[in-house]
Length: 111
Image 1 (cartoon, one colour):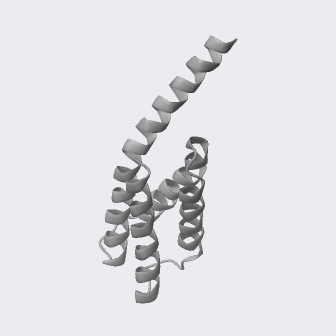
Image 2 (cartoon, helix red, strand yellow):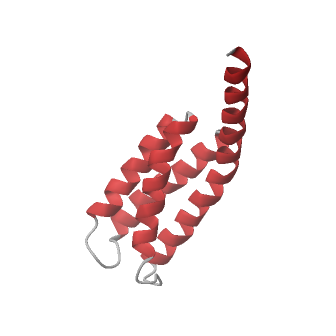
Protein backbone atom coordinates (compact mmCIF):
# COMPACT_ATOMS: atom_id res chain seq x y z
CA UNK A 1 0.00 0.00 0.00
CA UNK A 2 2.82 2.41 0.83
CA UNK A 3 4.48 1.93 -2.56
CA UNK A 4 1.20 2.66 -4.35
CA UNK A 5 0.75 5.85 -2.36
CA UNK A 6 4.31 6.95 -3.07
CA UNK A 7 3.82 6.29 -6.78
CA UNK A 8 0.53 8.22 -6.74
CA UNK A 9 2.18 11.20 -5.03
CA UNK A 10 5.10 11.09 -7.47
CA UNK A 11 2.76 11.10 -10.48
CA UNK A 12 0.65 13.87 -8.94
CA UNK A 13 3.75 16.01 -8.41
CA UNK A 14 4.83 15.44 -12.02
CA UNK A 15 1.39 16.51 -13.23
CA UNK A 16 1.43 19.57 -10.97
CA UNK A 17 4.83 20.54 -12.37
CA UNK A 18 3.60 20.14 -15.95
CA UNK A 19 0.44 22.14 -15.19
CA UNK A 20 2.47 24.92 -13.57
CA UNK A 21 4.82 24.94 -16.56
CA UNK A 22 2.00 25.41 -19.08
CA UNK A 23 -0.39 27.69 -17.20
CA UNK A 24 1.56 30.90 -17.89
CA UNK A 25 1.20 30.26 -21.63
CA UNK A 26 -2.56 29.88 -21.28
CA UNK A 27 -2.78 33.14 -19.38
CA UNK A 28 -0.56 34.87 -21.95
CA UNK A 29 -3.11 33.72 -24.53
CA UNK A 30 -5.84 35.28 -22.39
CA UNK A 31 -3.92 38.56 -22.39
CA UNK A 32 -3.69 38.55 -26.18
CA UNK A 33 -7.39 37.75 -26.56
CA UNK A 34 -8.34 40.52 -24.12
CA UNK A 35 -6.20 43.09 -25.96
CA UNK A 36 -7.81 42.05 -29.23
CA UNK A 37 -11.31 42.31 -27.73
CA UNK A 38 -10.57 45.76 -26.29
CA UNK A 39 -9.22 46.97 -29.63
CA UNK A 40 -12.35 45.73 -31.42
CA UNK A 41 -10.19 43.34 -33.46
CA UNK A 42 -11.64 40.20 -31.96
CA UNK A 43 -13.30 37.40 -33.82
CA UNK A 44 -16.89 36.54 -33.06
CA UNK A 45 -16.00 33.74 -30.65
CA UNK A 46 -12.97 35.32 -28.93
CA UNK A 47 -14.92 36.45 -25.85
CA UNK A 48 -16.35 32.95 -25.48
CA UNK A 49 -12.85 31.48 -25.78
CA UNK A 50 -11.59 33.87 -23.13
CA UNK A 51 -14.42 32.99 -20.74
CA UNK A 52 -13.87 29.25 -21.35
CA UNK A 53 -10.14 29.60 -20.67
CA UNK A 54 -10.78 31.47 -17.42
CA UNK A 55 -13.38 28.84 -16.47
CA UNK A 56 -10.94 26.02 -17.18
CA UNK A 57 -8.21 27.63 -15.11
CA UNK A 58 -10.63 28.29 -12.27
CA UNK A 59 -11.59 24.63 -12.16
CA UNK A 60 -8.20 23.05 -12.69
CA UNK A 61 -5.97 25.23 -10.53
CA UNK A 62 -7.30 23.90 -7.23
CA UNK A 63 -6.67 20.32 -8.30
CA UNK A 64 -2.98 21.16 -8.44
CA UNK A 65 -2.86 23.12 -5.20
CA UNK A 66 -3.16 26.59 -6.73
CA UNK A 67 -6.36 27.64 -4.98
CA UNK A 68 -5.67 31.39 -5.01
CA UNK A 69 -4.95 31.34 -8.72
CA UNK A 70 -8.19 29.43 -9.24
CA UNK A 71 -10.18 31.98 -7.23
CA UNK A 72 -8.74 34.84 -9.27
CA UNK A 73 -9.50 33.04 -12.54
CA UNK A 74 -13.09 32.50 -11.33
CA UNK A 75 -13.36 36.21 -10.55
CA UNK A 76 -12.15 37.08 -14.05
CA UNK A 77 -14.62 34.61 -15.53
CA UNK A 78 -17.49 36.29 -13.65
CA UNK A 79 -16.39 39.78 -14.67
CA UNK A 80 -16.20 38.73 -18.31
CA UNK A 81 -19.60 37.06 -18.19
CA UNK A 82 -21.14 40.24 -16.74
CA UNK A 83 -19.89 42.47 -19.55
CA UNK A 84 -22.41 43.78 -22.07
CA UNK A 85 -21.90 42.75 -25.69
CA UNK A 86 -19.51 44.82 -27.77
CA UNK A 87 -16.23 46.53 -27.03
CA UNK A 88 -15.53 46.81 -23.28
CA UNK A 89 -15.51 50.24 -21.67
CA UNK A 90 -12.13 51.76 -20.90
CA UNK A 91 -12.73 51.07 -17.20
CA UNK A 92 -13.50 47.40 -17.86
CA UNK A 93 -10.49 47.17 -20.15
CA UNK A 94 -8.19 48.35 -17.36
CA UNK A 95 -9.81 46.38 -14.52
CA UNK A 96 -9.97 43.06 -16.34
CA UNK A 97 -6.62 43.61 -18.05
CA UNK A 98 -5.01 44.22 -14.66
CA UNK A 99 -6.66 41.11 -13.23
CA UNK A 100 -5.32 38.97 -16.09
CA UNK A 101 -1.85 40.48 -15.63
CA UNK A 102 -2.03 39.66 -11.91
CA UNK A 103 -3.08 36.12 -12.75
CA UNK A 104 -0.06 35.81 -15.04
CA UNK A 105 2.26 37.02 -12.26
CA UNK A 106 0.82 34.42 -9.88
CA UNK A 107 1.30 31.70 -12.45
CA UNK A 108 4.92 32.72 -12.95
CA UNK A 109 5.61 32.44 -9.21
CA UNK A 110 3.91 29.04 -8.97
CA UNK A 111 6.47 27.37 -11.24
